[in-house]
Length: 456
Image (cartoon, rainbow, N blue to C red; front, side, top):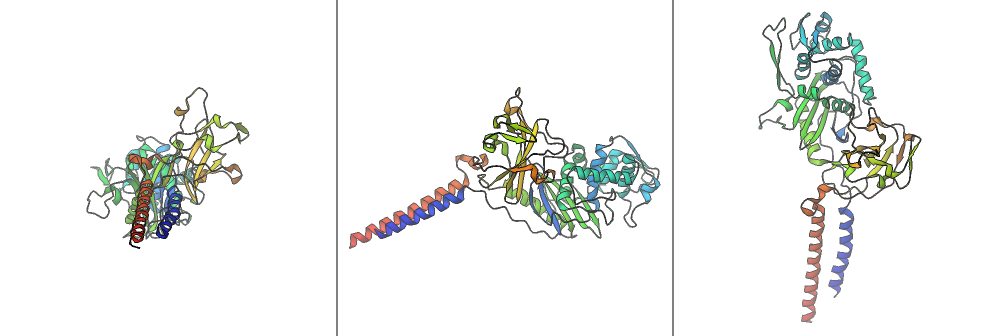
C-alpha cells in the first residue's frame, strides 16, 4: 500500500505541472548565427521583428539605397517618361564605381528601363539621372529621400545620395532599412520590376542594339537546386557593396502566404547570402501569423467606457479591424502572457473610422498591431476592416509619446485555431500521453504491491 500511495502522490505533483506548462506562450525562438555585423528579419504584414542582431546600429548601406530611390521615383513619375542623362549624372560618380549600363551624356531611356537597370544590376549613373528627372537636382532628391524615411518613422538613418556610394553621413540601421524595404515591396510596380530575372534595355549611344541586363541577387536568380544559393522563397531584393559598407543585402521572400524581409549589413563576401537565407528559413520555420481580431475583441479590452483623445466610447461602439496580423512563435497554442497597449495616436493614413491602435506585446517583443475602429451604425461589424496605409500597418516607430499610451487589463483569449487541427492540439496530445504514462506507473505500482502482499 505504501508504493501505491507514493505513485498517487507522484501523479498528483506531475499532472498539475504539465497542466501549468501546456497553456502558455512558448519561449521566443533564438536568433540564428550570422557572420554579418548586423541583420534582421521583419514580417511584412505584422511589422514584428522576428530575429536580429545590432538592429539599431547605423552602418553604410551601399547600393541597397536604390530601393528607396526606386520607390520615390515610382511615386513621383510615370513609367513612360523619358529620362535624359546629363553630363553630371554620367560622370559625377565615385572613381572606380563603374558604368554598368555604359550610358553616355545625352542618352535617353524611359523611367521603366531606368528602374530595371537601377534594381537589377545597380547602375549608379541611372540613380543620378532618375534623381535629376524627378527632383531637378540630386540635392533636391536627397531631401525627398530623407522626408520619405521620416514619414516611415526612421530616426537613425540618413541619406546623402541616390546611389549608395560612399558618404560619411549616409547610414541606415538594419531595422529601419527593413521598414524602408517594407514600404518598397508594398508597391506593386516596384515588386514587379525587382522580382524580374532579366530585362531588355532599349538602344543607347554605346549600345545601339540594346542590351539585356540580369538580376544580380543570387538568392533570387539561382535556379539550381544543388547550389548553396538556391532559395525558392526569395522573390526580390537588392545587393550592395562598398569598402566601408562591406556586403549589404535586402531580400524579400514569400512562403505559404507569409511575407518576410531580411536585411544584412556589413556582411562578408563568402557568407552574406547564406546569412540572409538562414535568417529567412528561421523566420518561416519558427514563426506563424495570426489574425488577432479572431481572438480578441473590445469586450475583452474594455470593461467600462474608454476616453480616447477627448472622446468617450462604450465598448460596444468599438471593434478591432479585421485582418490584424500578429506574429508569434510557431508552436503557440494560447495567448496567455500577451500584453495589450492602447496607443491613442494614429499613424499616417489610418482608416477613416480609426480612433486608436492596440499593440500586442510579449515580453520585449512587439507582435503586431490592430486598429481600434468606431463602428458604423449602418454597417455590419464583420464588414469593417482596416486597409494598410501606404506607409504600412502601424509600427513601433509610429507610436506616440508614452503619455498617449495605456496598458490594458489582461484577458484570457481563446486558444488559436491553428492549435486544434484534427480536433486535438499537439500539446494536448502530449498531456494525454503523459497522463497515460503516469497511469501506467500507478498501475504497475498497484500490481507490484498487490503481488508482494499475496506472498507474505
